[in-house]
Amino acid sequence: MSTGLAVSLLRGGVLQTLMIAAPILLVGMLVGLIIAILQATTSIQEQTLTFVPKIAAILGAIFLFGPWIVTSMVQFTIRIFERIPNITG
Image (cartoon, rainbow, N blue to C red; front, side):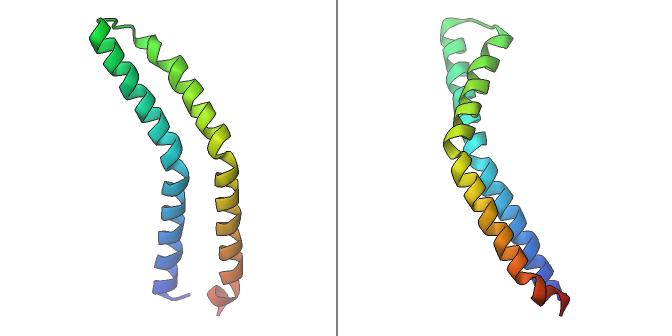
């Protein structure tokens, strides 16, 4: 296996990981930001207030983006399996 092929495989894996994690992390960050703004405006400083909405939003994002995540992972796995003959020489 050449160095270029190894770098290509690692780059593809990292990019795939970022693409899969991004929607879920962005939803969690957005909900956290909205709750932080509400807490700042209402002077409610309860630390546990953020957990339930974040968990609900992240579960909703997983439910919403789940089919896309699975399809993306299946396509990536198929591409990796198709490259196996090139890896072994």
